[in-house]
Image (cartoon, rainbow over all chains, first blue to last red; front, side, top):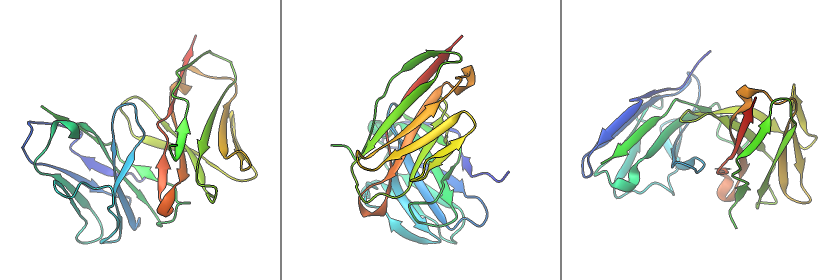
Length: 115
Length: 109
């Protein structure tokens, strides 16, 4: 069964350092999402791509977060500089289309701890 | 009011019990709803879609109540392996999917 690949699985960093997460969606899925999930809460959308274009980044803290999907396939999410409040699970998901009726397939996530 | 609200639980039930969770949503125009299951420190996985006519998959039944703006998930004959957090998903403003905070289920022997 095709899966969304994410790396690293865990990341520990000190505040003010830069971190980067990578995601490779299911082949053929045009839509890619980055979510942040704080313990005890539901996933919150950070950014949504349709192919290589950003569809929604309204909740992305653009002063420190950036995301790209240059060739419309895999994607990178970067945080620079990291802050203590960024500690969370960062989840990548993909879907075939971009409508709200699309089923999302999630990667295993990156658990980030900022010390 | 949050766009998608769930009772956080935990719901502690014995094996074999029937348990139901509700989830309220605020966007009355919403058409698509989902239940995802999330194990501790793992990724969410799609459990089932919720159709206007309801949806049943084995021991799991999902219902939609448009008048009261909530969806429900019923689990019959609970198994130990059903212990997880169940996330409700509904469209919010700007055509964006919103996840609830989840309802935790613990099934005990």
